[in-house]
Image 1 (cartoon, rainbow, N blue to C red):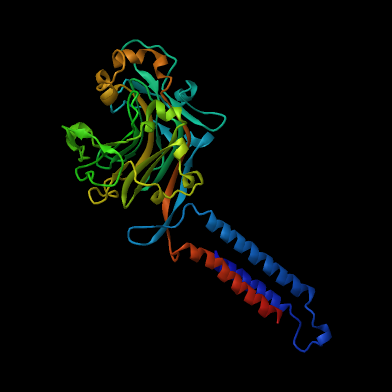
Image 2: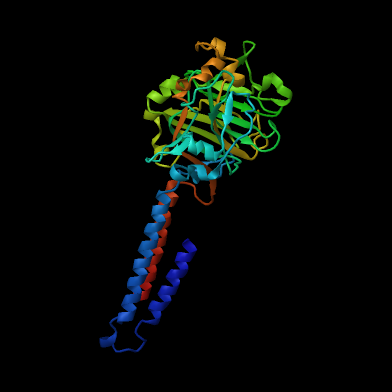
Length: 405
């Protein structure tokens, strides 16, 4: 952009010089000609406009300049926005059997739209829900929705702003990413997941045999235990640890379930880059201003609720070609097996029958934004940004002075 500006300036200065009074012209006739004055006016106007545009773009950069572990600079640049009336255009509806053995029928897009299981409200809120109108016989499966993004990602900053996440006895929702190829070798990241009326979100990684949580890493959540010991092993190959992966439970009661919804929802963020995979959550009143402004700066958010460190799990080789997934299932391997000790009434199979039990089994999404890291070269500080337009302005002033002589 700067080189193009300088070329344009050079062309205009040449035009201005060509329009100058010729040498030897009597002094009384040496006033600048109209063409000359017009050329200088256009030069000044173009330079000021270009500089203003340049400064505006710098100020609207997706995030402040941040630093890679190797010391080079980058910004988080908005790559994709999933929102409003176009939200479902770039997602596929999954209609296969539930791999977690839920009592669920995942419907196609046409059925989901026709039955009111997926739609966009007039204010742009995206809704996905389990069927809450149909009575079932015991043993029948309840209709619901599972969608996955057509686009796949390898690293990024994923920010989900939602007013409501599904909950209720027998309900098992998740917002997650899944690698292509054979599971679990390309990884799975469960960002939002829980069952029943739980109040604490659970973040989980499912991987091949070369990933572990770091017990002394800086995150605020609690590592889920197995056999009364923190389970650090993420490996799910050959049904290791019953495919449970490695999980961290958030400390906040506002991170899942009825309390999360009552206080207006909030924002979840997952950062996946060379420095590892971290998850943050913010209830509505605590959403950082940089997120609201579209200039996310994870380094200012404090410790994440969960973090998978690169020294114990390479985030680039163990997580490959991930699609974004939303789903709502019922009972199954977690909500079903856990039902008897959950405090929920009856059995999970009985719970499925009454549609009114699923009035809260809904996603209500404001937006999902995906940012990518954009390397910045030759930028070391905000002072550099300020000096750049000033330097160009000084050069322009010099050109104008020369042209006026």
